[in-house]
Amino acid sequence: MLKKYAIGSHPYIGVFSACSEDVTVTPPVENESFEEALETPVISNTIGGTRVNGSLMGLNSRGAVVSDIIEEREIDVLLDHIDVTVIPDPQNALGNNILMNDYGALIHPEIGEEAEETIRSELEVEVKKGTIADIEMVGSVAVATNKGVLCHPHVKDEEIDVLEELFDVPVSKGTANHGSGWVGTCMVANTKGAVIGNETTPIEMGRIEEGLGYLED
Image 1: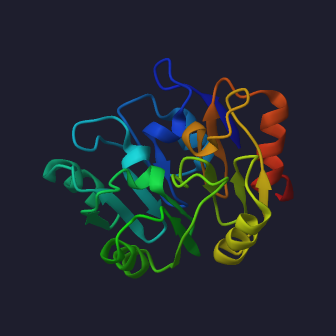
Image 2 (image 1 turned 45 degrees about the horizontal axis):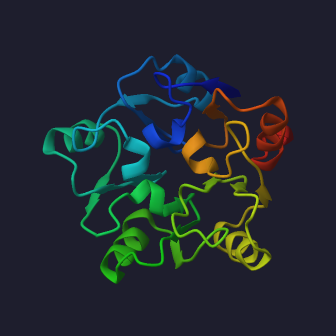
């Protein structure tokens, strides 16, 4: 199921939220839309006292990697539901800088080797460094599920080849929130559905539905 939503007045759902097949993390908001679309429990939480969970954490079915600004009480909230690994790295906006599903993770080229190995071992995925549309903040310009990857429309052919091999799913191009190529900031998605910024047009919704494989259900 696809749902359009705004957090407060903000249509950038992926900045504030993250999800996997098993759980969704949001700031303290009304969570019915997330539960209905994504079919997971919803954890209300903050990271470092901020509401931008999606920018500061990467999440798949094996656990979460989070920025080292997270506080102990916030870790405890997450640990009630998922395994959590704190990663100290200068590129600490991990949600912005990591694109992942249950098969692979594409990371910002400047993420350190220690952080790269932690992501590989803790989330049990193949990891590669790379860009999308020559943009290093790969988690901000794409969305990955276990059925598809939706990318910034300026993604290059050679980048698509890397994504298809790494994530083992089809890759497509699209926008959200009325023309934004930064689709990772605009939405969260798993194989069951997506919550998308409320400025997204019907044409964009159709491309998201097709690109992430919901028409196959």
